[in-house]
Amino acid sequence: MMVLFPCMAQGHIIPFLALAQHMEQKGYAITFVNTPLNIKKLNKSIPPVSNNIKFVEIPFNSSDHGLPPDTQNSDSLPYYLIPSLLKACPSLKVPFRNLLSNLIQEDGGEKPVCVVSDMFFGWSADVAHEFGISHAIFSTSGGFGMACFYSEWVNLLHKLLSANDVECMLPDFPEAGNFHVTQLSVAGYMQGEDDPFTNFLSENFSAWANSDGLLLNTVEKLDKTATMYFQRKLGIPVWSIGPLLLSEEDRSRTGSQSTISPERCIQWLDQKEPNSVIYISFGSQTTISASQMEKLAKALDASHKNFIWVVRPPLGFDINTEFMLQDWLPEGFLQSVQDQERGLIVKKWAPQVEILAHRSVSAFISHCGWNSVLESLKNGVPLIGWPMYADQFYNAKWLVEEVGVCVEAARGTNFEIKEEDIMEKIELVMGENEKGKEIRRKACEIKEIMRDALRDDGDYKGFSVKAMEGFFIAALQGRERATAVSQSK
Ligand SMILES: *[C@@H]1O[C@H](CO)[C@@H](O)[C@H](O)[C@H]1NC(C)=O
Ligand SMILES: *[C@@H]1O[C@H](CO)[C@@H](O)[C@H](O)[C@H]1NC(C)=O
Ligand SMILES: *[C@@H]1O[C@H](CO)[C@@H](O)[C@H](O)[C@H]1NC(C)=O
Image (cartoon, rainbow, N blue to C red; front, side, top):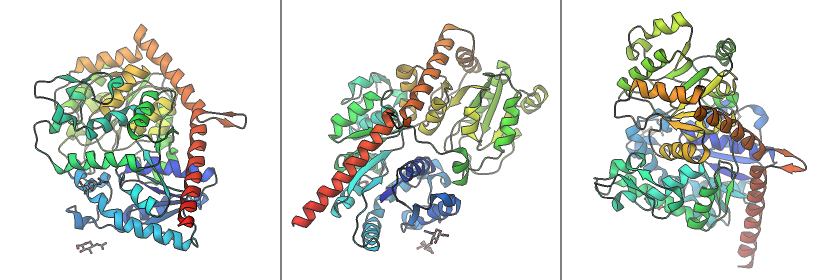
């Protein structure tokens, strides 16, 4: 049995579910741990074929941690409360110990093969080891992006910079190159005193070194720099096992319900020329400012390109509330879109997996959250990056500089964007110019690399398939060693 324990955030639960499905197919039973409200939702939603995946609740009450009642997922919290949710997580340590103890008892003394926990749950390594169970961290972010984010926080980079610095390097990761301060997620903390959130990240990330291995949802061939960094930094094995993604159907079951049916989207896309549509979405947790939305709308209008745009309320408004499109979009825009049949505007959430897989889609304006990046690369769709926080800045940097399938159009949410800039980037990626052709050629190449990594037809095993097998072997050996040690005591 494998015990999987993601943080209470949709962007983490979804890749952990993909990992659970993958391990189940390899013959492992899975115990999937989370807090009560998340488990209730999952238990209802996951199809009955997965009867080897058992959902188990760990007690948690948000009211005990200064959070609104019954909020157990970052998706149901405003952005400013997310640090409070993270800080509440180490309180799960005692309940998690009890849970492992119960699982072992129920199984007649048989121990799980491995505990695979979230990047924010480094403390769970010690708990697993108390029972002689091996432990791995599964990072739901990219390799390069996570390595930069990790480095930035364990080194408390903001304390090493002075107010005049505009560029810097990461002290323990020179291979990552130069960063502009606007690419640093610590930038917001530069003038501040020690705050509990920065301490949380630096301490809890440091605890990764107590784990027995690191699983990355990426492809070794594209993301070697990251593997090198983590091996050097942590001294533990690193396995790149991606891209692990949920199907559209399974994802919609987890609660990210689209406001439009996949069929309707496909029907709309079918009527468009191949490679003629831009897809725009900023993920489940980010949004842009009202004035940026207006400029983006004008740029789309002026570009004369087809588009599908997932619209959410702008910055400063609850992204989960109901709203009217005309409240946020420029006057006449909706009418113009309708008249020209050039655009499909979707509220809140669209069937992204199916959209990106459609041949009519040729570019993705994205916040560069990792799940979106993987879905885009897997389908050979080039990106127009608009990173907004955390690892997204580094994902964008990696896509532009190392992978060569992206141009950055904007960075962050609190500044004015120019209509012309956005139009220029769209033209660059979609148009008949050398750079655009190169980006599109590269995107096709990456798509093949991604597919190859997961290929497993007996004789041939892709990189990620081999890495996964390496992880299983190490986990089983880890358990044997631990059992031998406890028997000799
Ligand atoms: C999940 O559903 C099954 C079958 O309906 C039920 O037996 C089990 O108790 C549920 N588990 C939780 C944690 O709700
Ligand atoms: C959570 O704690 C609050 C305050 O202590 C309590 O009123 C509430 O009933 C608890 N919720 C659950 C589900 O136990
Ligand atoms: C994680 O952060 C919390 C809050 O700052 C702290 O209490 C806890 O000790 C940290 N965990 C580890 C393993 O350092």
